[in-house]
Length: 157
Ligand code: ATP
Ligand code: MG
Image (cartoon, rainbow, N blue to C red; front, side, top):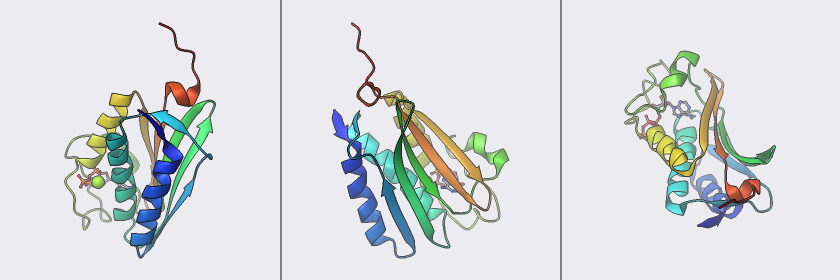
């Protein structure tokens, strides 16, 4: 169903910002951005990404959530300044049960399912999902929302 992404993110971000003592969570979005999505799945996707951003920033820091318009495609980004991901691990992070084995990652526990689920949700909507990272500096996840509403593409039948 049509969802106002800006409003949905406002409520998620403010609740994380209020409950995370060592992290600040910020939001930057257009005034409104309507997309076609399964709301529960979209919530799960954003919670997984923001949850990871906090979890993999053990020294605290800022998590920036944003929606930008890149040539008619809405891009939802979650950017952290946490431990980062070594370049050689990046191709595997969306694999089921894959967990990065680095000195910084080892003490942080998990199952390796969250990103697999994110990828499945993105693909079910026809969205792209991409990670960029510098080990020791931080990570940005981007969701490319190829929504017929978001991009105003003509509908043919
Ligand atoms: P869970 O199933 O509880 O989410 P998880 O967090 O280990 O467990 P994923 O969310 O699938 O699993 O992430 C896979 C791996 O990618 C993580 O184990 C971690 O090594 C790495 N990773 C994911 N997000 C980040 C991030 N924001 N910063 C650094 N590493 C990350
Ligand atoms: Mg996770």
